[in-house]
Length: 291
Image (tube, rainbow, N blue to C red; front, side, top):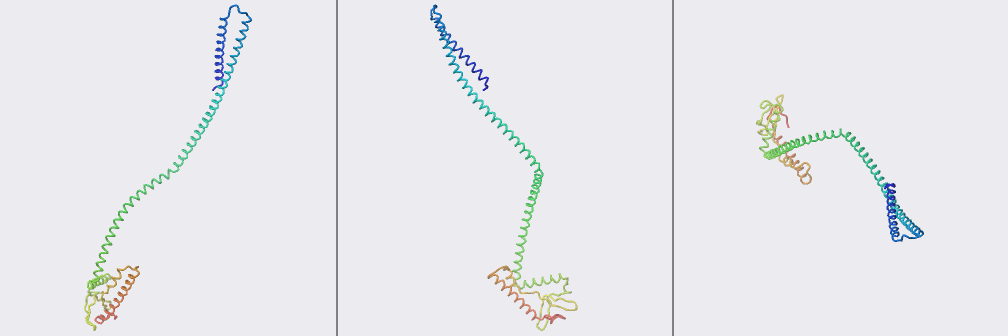
């Protein structure tokens, strides 16, 4: 509270109390004067005035004491209010300072963020382009995955057909007659691929007579210089087919069986060569090489 306002309040309160005391003293004096006789001795009156004056002074002293107490209380209240006001002003200054610091920090942070965003603008564009490229690649991958799945299905179907054909061929080759026809067909394909012409460069199923008896090779090839060579395409194949059904990486009993079958195939081929040599095809041909 303002000290001048406190002083004015104290003066006004003292004036009111003083007027009240004066009114009380005057009322008492009037009462005594009214009760007294007109012939009172002046000395008595003077004594009465002195008493009244003493009472008035006593009242004024009491009022002054009360005013001093009230003034001290008002002063203490004023000091407390002044301290509270100072504390509020200090807190207000701290709040303003903190608000200014926060505003400055926020402005600086926004400026940094703006600079970062500006610096990251090319990166954002690159990421956008990359996202578009990834989406495009994903679409292409999905399309290629579908095409690959279709190709895999086609390959699986082709493999299944090939396996079925191979199984059919293997089953057919187990029969001697079928294996012989297949061998003759492959032999014809080989010589024709080499540019030889039937009945000019080779003959098929020609009969040959020799000391060993009549023979019928699958093909007689006419070589330059009037030379001839007999070719027989038939070959033992059963053991080899059985061995080919066992994986080459097989071990144990299966591996031993595969090795035994291959050995049996080698022996069968050797015996077949010996049997072909015993037919002596060269004896029935002109200028044919001997075995």
